Image (cartoon, rainbow, N blue to C red):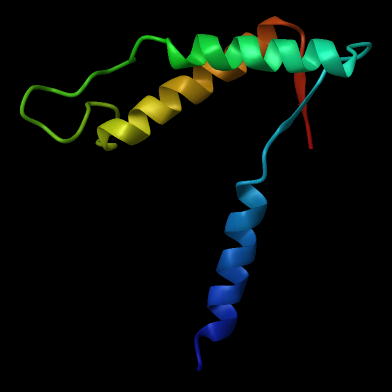
Amino acid sequence: MKHAPHLVITAVLLAACSSPAVWDKPGAVEATRKDDLDACHAKAMTAPQLRPATPGSAYGSTMGLPVDESRATTERLAFDDCMAGKGYGVKR
């Protein structure tokens, strides 16, 4: 297989990009961090959609992304904003 090495490299890069972020806040204990993570997840799940799909369309108006992807983006942004608002930063 001539292209197999490229597939392996692509898979490794995708796995690295999809690793979960570790939210860190100086002085925060694990129990507090978990409570804050849970609270921000709940808040993100109820965040209003930024740009809903147009009627009869499978795509939203968010740069042509499918509705599910734009919803996931909305939730990720709301979660990130919530955690940052609580004083956390992403530790890589």
